[in-house]
Length: 140
Image 1 (cartoon, rainbow, N blue to C red):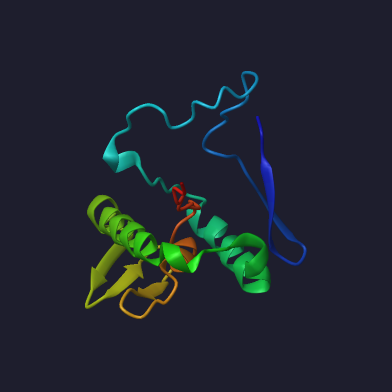
Image 2 (cartoon, rainbow, N blue to C red; image 1 turned 120 degrees about the vertical axis):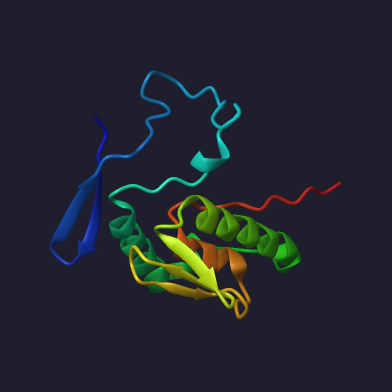
């Protein structure tokens, strides 16, 4: 099976197997995500999520310009996406996420996110969950 090596700290490598193998059986047919899914399964976390997020946050702290970009005109869509994601997290993962007074708390890794004070909601989302989002703008 496919495995990915992720550096956790200098000299410390963790090997993690991805949840999905979309191209294992052959060429890409670009049909990923084109079937209905259960809303509860939209954002999935597993036993490796905390370690993966630790690495992701380190990478973002070291070189965020390599991993993140956003157009200022997308800000309203970013806020809407963050609202939907945080609502999903507290509804479908209440053992791991809860919010109060505009603060989202992650009980799995102790992180807190001030939802009232973020100028860059898409960047903030990248600090919360493994999934990476893309906001697409239609241009004539």
